Image (cartoon, rainbow, N blue to C red; front, side, top):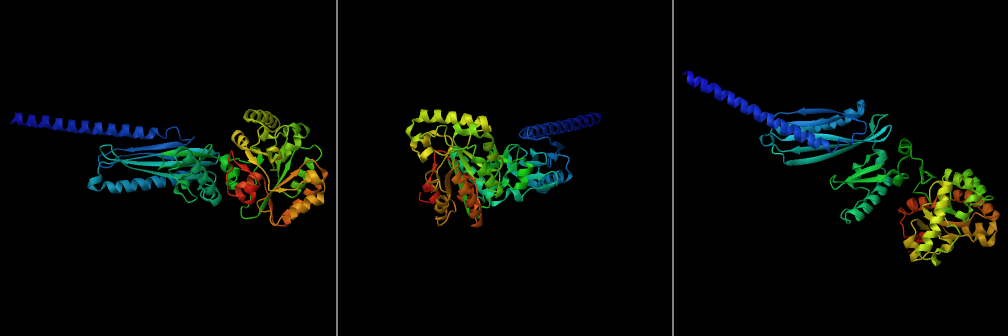
Length: 450
């Protein structure tokens, strides 16, 4: 009898030891799985802390990192979403076939500005054998000052349109064009504010595409730009342009002029308007302050080479030498090279297109101001056009007559309902197009002939 009791006691101890050993092994496996899951976002916490909760039981174990950035409203909004996912998981765990499945939740947090963050929450469920059941993602953007989510600023039509074009280019370059995006594509709604741009997740979050803020600065709302401290694009002051209103671009070649450029800028500034100046690098030394002033008031500076060279008569090496010298002078005066280039004489051939790493810009209305030197004739040429919407008007900043014509044309254009915009703004808003290297934006483009 004693022997049987002793044997029973030994078996009981062995069973309990076995159970605890198994439980310990399973718990260790779960903790290892959690640690492995948490590695992915470990470096993407952007000054945010996390509160970790590990609940191990055989029925429904879960491991969660909660956002703890110290902002009650923000932390609660993310926690509410996570708790919803946890509740759904625990409810399903009551079903026999789901017992033993595991839930893992973690977040990435990006600091876009002092008061702006983007958050990505990843939720993963696995079977008790470690097989992946599901992966879900949720993105948030918050203004820490208000504690509220940012939605409207990231859902504007013009921004989504720009983002879709950027993503289509990424798809074409990296994915063989297998994905096509439009402004309503669901991927765009996953965009999060990050340190360097809008981070968009595609292919069910397998690919991350960063769209630099500079590429979409004109499409971001003015409030959001202010929070992100974005005021210029390549030195050009960002202005709000209404894409529904007619627009025209005034352009001035061959300067800057110590005598006339500032007079033209005075007129533009008086009417809160802008123009694009295609300047000859050899002339920059004569009016560097005027050039810098033009950028400061929102005008755009383009290159017109150093020597007013006919680029179409040069070979590729000659073109590169001319532009290298030109860009170095712009760098010296402005701190950056222009993104636009107007080939002198409008001379542009295949070699020019293939060699230049700047956007090639022509015109659609030639005032012949260099020839007439007569303000009335310049004005009559412009006014003789049936419509100037989408036009690029060519003038030169070297003549008193051009200044006189500008003084009358600017208020007249405004009275006719036109917005005076830069060439880049015109192509972006008026033509809803991205500037493309190797393409010459000539008369045919601006008149719709091509």
